Every structure is written in structure tokens, then in C-alpha cells.
Amino acid sequence: MRPKSPTLTPNELEMMRIVWRHERGVTVRDVYEALRVRRPVAYTTVMTAMKTLEQKGHLKASQHERAYLYRAARPKHQVIRAMVREFVDRVFSGSGRPLVVHLLEDDHLSEADLRDIARMRGKKK
Image: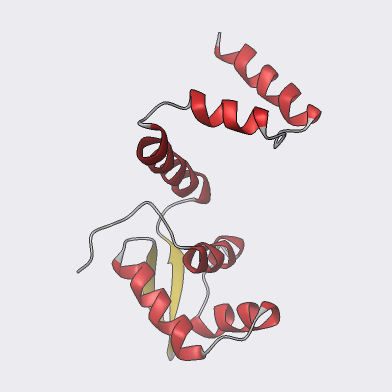
């Protein structure tokens, strides 16, 4: 069995977004149909990827009638937080400051974003 990984590949993240939108759970068919609207994808590819997400600890499967029903093992905010932490650790040696500086210098943050950040920072004091 593969070790649990906080980092999702782009395709895995796309699938998890679909799962998170459906709190009651999804089948492979549900995810396949949602992906097919955006791009060509094989049903077996989706099935294999969802099994991988289950093995990595991101999905929980349960038998429902004749199909497996998949639910997220953790809420979206927890997964995103772990991915960001892993990214900051790997790319910036654990310091968030260079990431913020990079976002500011490259104009990735709008004035509204900056106001929200200032408001959040004020709450932490």
C-alpha cells in the first residue's frame, strides 16, 4: 500500500474537487461524467485514479448497491492546508515569507485580497 501523501497531482485534485462538491459521496461513474464534460477521459483511468486516491488515504469507499460510493477522507480545507505546508517546506525551506513576497511582487494579490489579509492579520494579534 502506498504511503499517505498530502500532495495531490493536478488530475487527483480535479477529482477531489468533484468529490468535495458531493458530500453524500460519488461513484466512479459520477466523477467520470463530470470530467468528461471538461475533457476526454477513459472510464478505467478514472476508476484507477480513484483507487489510488483511496490507497493514498484521500478517499473512503463503501459498497452501495452494485457500485462503490466514494467520500472524502478529510475536508477540503485540511487537504489544501497540508498541500500548502508541504509546498512551503519543500520550496521555501519552511518559511512562508518568501511565498508572500513572491505573490506581492508578481501582482498575484488584488487590493481586495490585501485588505482581507490585513484584516486576518489584525485578528491574530
